[in-house]
Figure 1: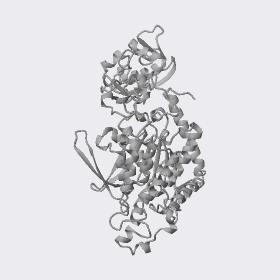
Figure 2: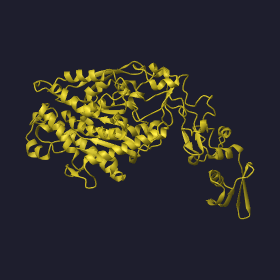
Figure 3: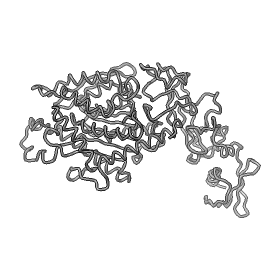
Length: 591
């Protein structure tokens, strides 16, 4: 019998005894039978020809009893099928036996664990460690004497000695004997010692389980646009209201999105939704965002403007943002945030994200510095310089301006950041593949743009010099052109991508391209204009969902969808169902 025939026979061990027809080179197997006495052989027949393959007892045991023992009748969190091989790494990496390739030489290190070495990757990565056999043994993800682990699949762990001190005690850690004053209190790590001892969760908990517990990755993206941030603020207030109707008054936007991305004013909204307060909950409810704009925009963009340098000195913005965010860093956010900036010295985008901050100390900047930087729109506000440190203490300088120069619509940045994490093996996203965009669910919020009739034409701009491009009719044509072009291109790309994947319902872009007069401005901060922007947001809810026409540049009604309000209600329902499903799979909540 050929090696390939033996391989096919071994795969059949996971099936009950039955009549089978399998073609393998020159061998045709009619039946397969396991010895009734639990012996060491596998008998097969082809007509009158008898074929026998010797098997270790533990191979049969592995087929019948699953891999390893089970604690308290619970499935192991890394068990991906009935027969599994796992690494001894921390955390364990696992593959189903059915998916493991045949290797040329038998891997002797696998035999004690009861795995057939002929069906095992022999590159020393997988060695069939089924995990601990009793609660008294050390768990394979213990990385030091004192460890905190996520509830993700597989668990992500950090030594307590490496965990930063947090100000308030984290009560959820105390049942596990973890010192809460030496524990990250942003709800990412909560001292879960293993699958059977998880802390209880509820719909009011600060953060839902990661995508590995669900079926999709949820993304919120918010464009840049100055005072027009009131428009997405209005949309988010409506969405949060619908989530609260489903899940209770404590529900917050940050409880439902895995990633929140924002540029410029969208970056500030991202920080307000994701930064923790003293109780570990979001700093702002969505309904409070617009009040922040109404209270502070008149001072951020005062009507008395500078004649030299940027129109506004930015001092009030710096003061209010630093007071608002304090010492919170990018790595402290409740959600995984993505905030783009542009380094004017290096002439390249600099993207700040929670994922990067957890791995690169120099990117774990103060959230206030990042928000000030992404809001530093050229000609409006001054660029921002700050320093961080590398792991070895070397300083790192940042010379940053508005992220809208590179990505005014950060939707693709958020998707790319997730894909990068999947490629790097981040367990939060197992088993989603890097390019599996059909598993994404995206809400992309624009801040509006001027009606086409109120823009410029070639005859007019053909007469402009440098000053005309920098300032014309209360606008900055060159800045507006760059930011709007990048935002529309991202929308076109994302829209076509989701159509190609036949999951259009999972991508919702809400944008208004009919702003008139002062409402199209990014810096007119009079009470009258700010209140008009609130009304624009409310009216936008009642309009039909649109998609941008690549030829005309206009947002055209999507005849296959309802109003933005109706789509947001459906979106809220899907977000709620996804979160509940994750909590159910986590095993701590029943509905």
